[in-house]
Length: 526
Figure 1 (spheres, rainbow, N blue to C red):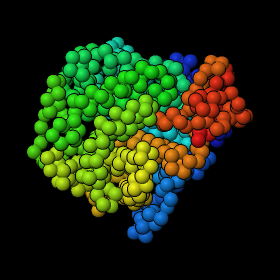
Figure 2: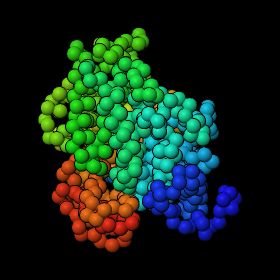
Figure 3: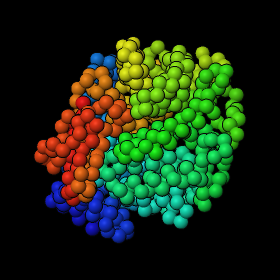
Figure 4: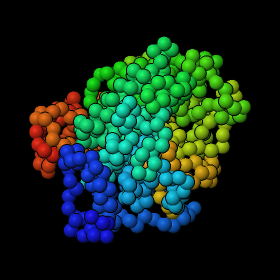
């Protein structure tokens, strides 16, 4: 069917369910995925009226007004996700011709650079659309995520050797068949959250196969850690090690996978990875996490710029993973072992106005860059809320307010939507690019998801609603709905296919699912 032949009646039809998409031939899968993208876009514009994002420069008064909004309310961040972030990606980024997403955009959403596609980029978009579905239960988001999953499984997985290709052309043919560790781990990211939302067992099989390659082919069984790059046949191409090949599997997908499956092997794997990273990557003289390393964990100095030796975001990320592991395991040593890094991050990693530095000096931490990146700012803001959760000290809430205001005033693009890649410490734009192989809706949407849940569950102590769509579960199949690592979160209420559902364990926070073809579910957590 040509795009011009689509009628309003067809737009209003419910999308075919995920089970049907999985059961037909793969060639027809891709055709239907392309159509589902178009249906989702048109449904958004025609039915929801969400195609009219703000298109005016934010004034000084508007920026000032941001500080008066209640950034401690979870709804503030859910609304940001659904008004300032996702409408713009819906309008501009979907490739309705070949599937998945367009990779590169400038600030005003003009396509720039090449047309190649990156599996890690596609999966991180899947994460963002899965978050939007968690927030709303709207089929358009899940339909787009499902189409992108189909594209990823059909084109990005190496059917001969296994593993995700580094890069594809516009149509999905591999153009770089090596297997960079960063790409492998981040390609599992969106798939893991998608699995939590849908319990799609075919998706879980691919994640598990990828994870098995990491454990058997990518892991250095002598010195610990993961090698940086594999060849297509899974032999080692680069023996080097860096933060993105060590900590990223935990921060990107492993904890989400554990929460969705409650399989102890993922938690044990995450603990092993993080303990190796702390043991090998922490500088004994300064306590900072440093990088990169050769295969024997000798640190490699790559530049002479003393302001950029320490990546503040990576130090935040490592400590944040230990915080999350602490909540899951109650092992106090995870807090004790990262206390020194936490102190240095607060002393040397953040400006008075709440902006988190991109980098600082190693031996002289008072030297630092004059800018921040979007992902570092959101990690810093979540870092504050986690420290409040762990200590109860309200100084971290005050600190979060500064960081949140900086994010809302200067990183959110009020004219063209979404976020800038980088801004200077005074709020001026440093890098206004909207999309690239490493910049998608992922970091902003993960932030909006987690910070909204952290605030409502930990600070406001109020319930939250999340939505799921499970295809053909087994009778009494256990389903764990919480996407955060706090095992004290309980289930208050469950609605399945519009009816109240009483078969759940409130305290252990799991639901016994009915054996239906499709389970559309709203869950209230508290």
